Image 1 (cartoon, helix red, strand yellow):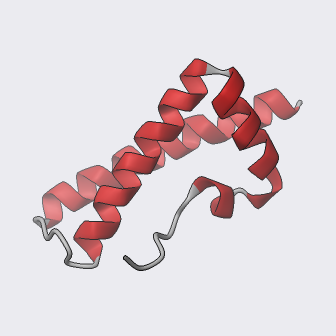
Image 2 (image 1 turned 90 degrees about the horizontal axis):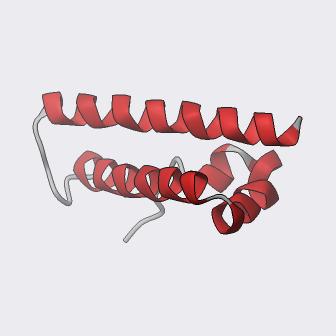
Length: 81
């Protein structure tokens, strides 16, 4: 499979260590990161036509990914403060 874009450590390289640390120490963060990874993978497979789906579903998944990413970023910046 090709490279999956939008992975957290690549989108937030300045927080790569913090992401890894929080996955180990914060159950809520770990759950959000896992859900983000799952949604991102489904989207990647849909966008590359490995597992096609309708545009409405893709849009909904993109919104879900964005919401998760916003919450993850907030936790990263709150933890960094």
